[in-house]
Image (tube, rainbow, N blue to C red; front, side, top):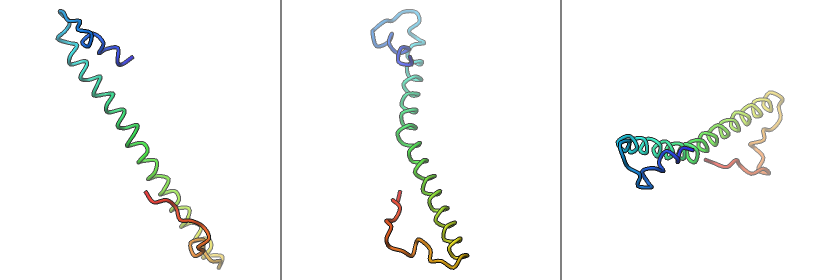
Length: 86
């Protein structure tokens, strides 16, 4: 639907309304580029950051509970793989 606004300039249709088509096309293409960048770069990055923070908080909470109960914490054991770093 957004690309439909740029069809007229691409097809070579010009006329009295041509002066409005170019700025509109620039805005539409800019919006498409921006939304693509947000979708492909910013959203996954924020998700990874939040998940890492969530895992660290859970590890701290578990270590605190283990310390309180007098049990060895999970971090001391080398059986489990470490979380992936971002």
